[in-house]
Length: 183
Image (cartoon, rainbow, N blue to C red; front, side):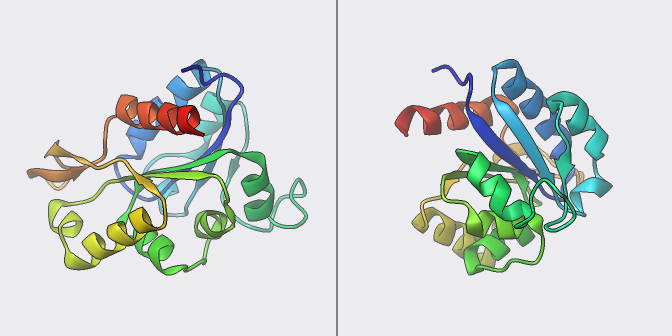
């Protein structure tokens, strides 16, 4: 399936797996996808906005009301622009916000305003991924119609092996292509 001419927003939360998101964004742009990146404050502690601005040729958005391009708020303008919202990596914090409707930053308000397909690629420590609260929150997102690209197993940044490692960029890209093919 061709991804050319599709518009997506890639949301990046604060996890070391954000470096993998740069590879995902690069591949999507090479596929002809229009990619706009939204980063949380915590994400910027792991990888900088200039990386994604260079990869996409577009500004990176971080706050709701500081951009003249979106007088009604970036969460509204970006939600109207894109067909798909992909959050990768999705931390336990973002997953909890999404599952319970909290909106305290651009990405969480965008998630609530977004009416297209949503795809989430979790990434976290094994104990967090298996915590009952996270299991419940992921189940709620699935029930809400969110596509979850389950994390794999492998070496984690906490120097252990286990589940919680964000899916590889190619697997996330395949899930994005699948969402476009089915919609």
